[in-house]
Length: 43
Image 1 (cartoon, rainbow, N blue to C red):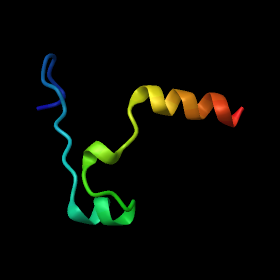
Image 2: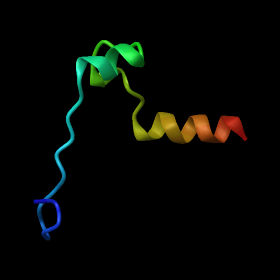
Image 3: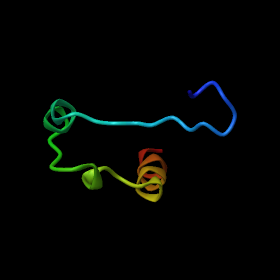
Image 4: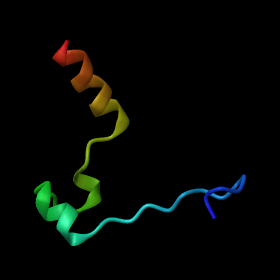
């Protein structure tokens, strides 16, 4: 399980998540660089 060393968490999503955020797939989420750029632009 995730409590052990070297045992990564597994994340899953649901269709409900995609619909709630108006996404077609997880690839529509911003990557780390886009998030960093958005934080810089926000001030």
